[in-house]
Length: 397
Image 1: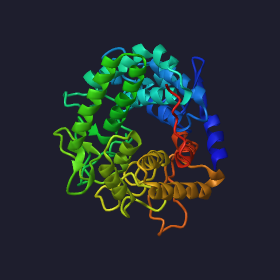
Image 2: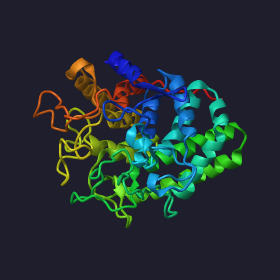
Image 3: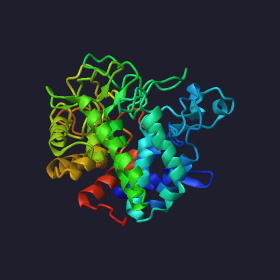
Image 4: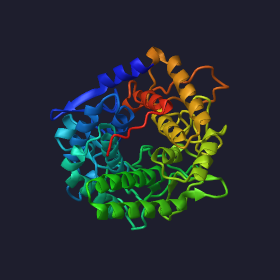
């Protein structure tokens, strides 16, 4: 399984301007995707340090520089996707150079910090410090649409993405009635990424002797961590996947909150509540955590983001379980996803598979049009292996 994962990543390794990156997947997304390329680089960073560094430089060179509604571009924002081809060359699609993503910018900063942790070097941070400051300004000034300390998104492009997190299908973010939320929308996992990015960057600034900037970043992380309380559903004992335009939390149980554990964004007692919610029967299929729990109005086991199972989503959750010491839950997710890989052709985990219960089908049910191979799915088990072995980078001094 590990060999297949790494061979697939070799297949998806692409080059742009002489720099390597992981293309998102074939056949639909064989190009540079900010979020996908970053998360894949994070997943396999100890297996391939150079591609992380080159991905950082590629994305730094393409940070947004202007306000351009048709491309959802803003200064300091990390690009979502870069397309080539006839439509792109003729300027007939905004996706040729599209910035409609709320989470790629904090994830870019997380990758920069993770790279420093593994290499023990601050050289890339020093080189990209101007772009780091631009990205931080985007978090503070442009990603936070109303100044409440939370990242929100609103599609301004005539042909852009309505939803701009990793669940970017039109119906991926819903309320308890199955109705898509009204934008601007604040996603719970994006807040976790932003908290983690600021906290980890503060350490780098401390090491560079800029303690004032480090303190500002810690204050910003604390502000977002406080605002994260608006997502907590005390009656259901878990976090909402998102807040809508009126800052109303969606009570639907979804997998998004599992990423808060990866980010280390919540206290231990809340982490335990997330574990309990996502490992419960409705959310957990027996093969992994569903994107949306069975029993929710919008649940569809073959819905792209409304009940299916995504390996990378489970890998981030699993890494978070390990981080908080929930080893039994980690092992269950790891074992089940590993076994799922052995049931697919060539031991290849696809982009996603159906969220049917394991008690109903003896094998995981394929999703008919999933990318296979797909980069962050290929990186899922290698990253979970590192988490399971307890290998934590600590090279910086």
